[in-house]
Image (cartoon, rainbow, N blue to C red):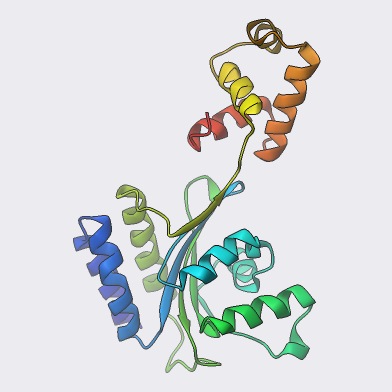
Length: 234
């Protein structure tokens, strides 16, 4: 696998466009004997994927918010090391939600795999998963952690540099009033100013800004405006 991780770095380095990168990854993954891949970028209020999994499964994963259920993502966050995984038996599943998740993933040929998580800027998480339809994996030797992390870090940098379009994503949504109040706040207006500008009561402005802050999981109004700007919500 160490050689494969070097190949991933090499392919990523020569991929000058989004189409080149997306075109090269599937064959590289199949060369290693896997059926599909998923690059996942996780932030507190945004998550997106670049993957060749069945689109129906990608859409379902995001619409059902399986990030909060997925044991692989949870293990990645907890260990921050490359690891192999496989779907447990139904009796081993801790909850009905997890059992349902694994069952639905298996319907799309995702039964085992390798996942490599890395920390990115602002302590966010990126991870690459190589998935197989086989019920379990057997590797000749342990995964080279340094080679794995280096290759995925290079992939992350390339995806960001080329602004590769996600194949599926979820992000925070604001109402028009929430976005408008945050926009004014980002421009330095106080809640009293916003109330006068929009012909709203102070309490109403406070209500919209507090709701926006909660949606963005922000500790302060300043952080909420910064997040909304970064996510292009305002």
